[in-house]
Length: 235
Image (cartoon, rainbow, N blue to C red; front, side):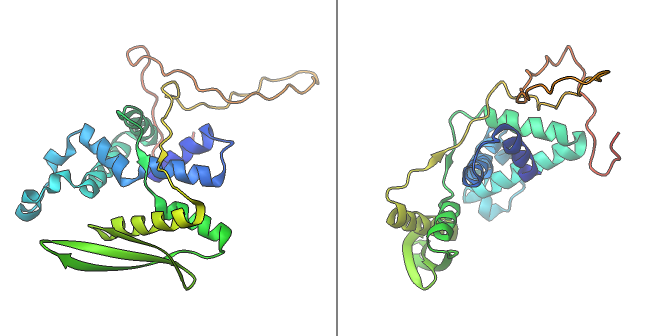
């Protein structure tokens, strides 16, 4: 559901973006850090059912669990109220994040660069070892048979992201996280293409105009439209 919402938003509101730009923006809208921040807005950590061990170990603040919890809430909104409600619920929440979320998907960026420059898809080899009282992972990324970068982290994912970042720095120079594109406050209602007026006589073709985003009506002045559920016939 989340992938569908972000894909529709980007397709309609960023028609001139390249495939790489769309991929990076979508990643910043759906990555674990973003979803965890959205979950913290709702204090979802307080409602998680956890075992005693993970609860004492700070599981209610674990980003991966918070992100999954927010996705579950979004799915519940869709099942209860339909796709349109889920679409606006997510975008309204994302729009009110206090700061733009940083895109840390270095693996995705490396894959794009490696395929363009080397014609290879990156492959990661990771190993974990106990260091003191905690576990640390080391990851090496390869393109073909050549190592491109090495990374370390408390989790396998962090180590792979570190390796991807090191590889990017060796291939393209200094890498900075990309800021997430904030959803404009005016784009609260999805624009629909107006119906063409009936013509009784041939007329010169009018110049096409881009779709505009209409302001969202006040809730008390307009009843929310019925959202078509998946599986129902289109009217």
